[in-house]
Amino acid sequence: GRTRLYWARLAGSWPSVHAVPLTDDPAVELRGALAADPPWGLAVWEAWTETGPRLHAVELPDPLWPSTVNPTPVTPGGWGIWRPAVAVAGSVAVLIWEDERDAPGDLYFARWDRGRGLRDAGGIPLAVGASEQRWARVTRGGDGFLAVWSEEDPDGAHSLRVLRIDAGGNPMSDPHPIPVRAGVSLVPDVARS
Image (cartoon, rainbow, N blue to C red; front, side, top):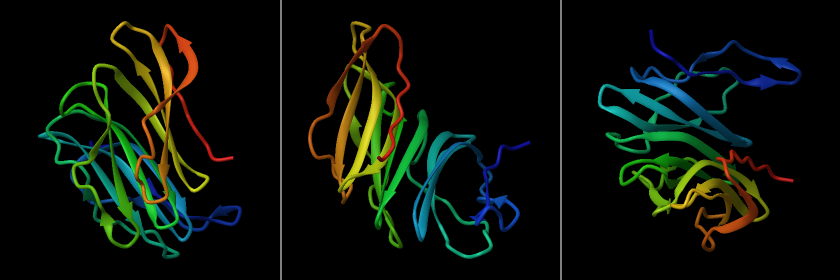
């Protein structure tokens, strides 16, 4: 057996169609994330193959009937890729994930342009170094995006970090701490208000 991701479009108060497989990819598909800014959306997930995990994404078409689509590899694989998150605003999407290519607990990100696809093949370091970053979440907010994640420093102290990202998907500054300290790992979330 293989774990598959399915999708369906909901219209009005009830599903308008049945669910269909998202892809025909032979990889095991896990931990999907989805974001939309009508009329388009982006799905991202962990794709596990014999050579290890990688990140896949697909721009979702806007027909009445969902169809199976071809995924775009975001990362080449060969190292741990965990817990993707995605947000869409206008014609840009921001993807964030835990990436172990250099060390456990690093965060990478990539940008996706509607109709043109992945802008940053392989991803770009977002938060890397001695501290471990986990549980990243991202949402659209204001004139761009807002990302938040849990951080554990080398001394074992836990805190949260927040980062503003502009409408083009570019980080605007260094991450700022949220004044919460805890002795255990934190699992944040973020939403537009």
